Image (tube, rainbow, N blue to C red; front, side, top):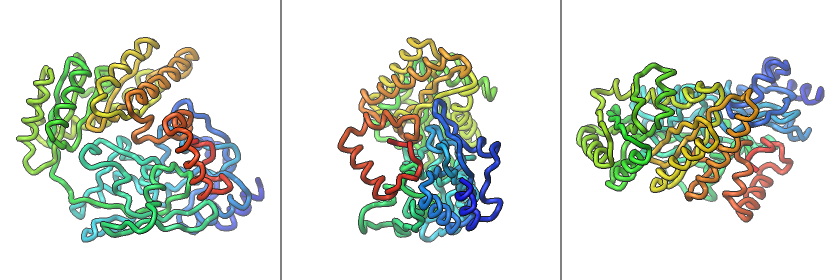
Length: 455
């Protein structure tokens, strides 16, 4: 191990290689529950591409595992340490290198925080649409690693649709450039899309070229109260079937609403079975909101309340963004799922989750990117209670099994990491898994990049 540290420090500044046990422990895991973390040998905090390359050459020569990290806001254990590894934190590589209003691109380092990029491009009349709930903390590199989504995916899509090109340091330290700066490009295999969502198992993203859009008008939202989640899901189906494309379409069940109120004191309606938020960012959203309100009423909404202005709309969205933090506060620990199902099966997913919660005697709140069918069942439990923890883990597995039975996927945007690696094999099947492993070997023949994650 001393040789590892000595060789790392030969190409990195003294403060760029940390071995203090307390610091290493604080970086050893992300925000996921039930995901073991090992004891790392060192934490490396590079500021340049060359320093990342030096780290990878050193680790590859000594066959030392490397675990790349962003802000560690992930929810699958993908950033968790393995024993004896080098933790490679990209958080200090946080420069926005270029914003081009003509080409509508931004070139950024991986440590740039999502919200910082959004604010920077807004000064040029542009927007970067992917907006995970943790957008004030999460980094672009982490978003790319997990293929993150967000509240506005129903209209604008996910991270993968905005990554045009990448600079990636491979396991042996070579620098790979993928993709392009142009609006179109189909030369060769799409290695850019392959890297997105690979959770640091194929290479280290050190630079990203991202597509931007013209900044849309401010959103105007409405809130619709429903007696049940099934009625709210019926409204979602009617809205999408009618051809509407809201900027967001979000759902919170009663458990989530109560948790948000307890945390934020916002006064959201707690007696309703579910709250559906719909928003449009068109120049004149009033007709669309009116039409969506009528569809909600026809599906059984007890009340439909349009926001009076953009500020009131933003307040509603703040409540939705607080949902996962609020649910964690219910029992002190939460296990957050992100099962995505076809929109037509959304009600079955929520009703099935409620049945699982009752059977296991647990509090499970559900918030959802309803327009995508992407649900976030969140199991609330006391980590100090051994029996409750066991039931929490069992209920989590049943929720994922339910999602697969409904034609869905085990993860819509959080990734696989450690938490869902057994389930990935079930979803992919033997042939796909064999090809996944072959691709991994082609990029990382010595298996040092984020070992033990995905499969």
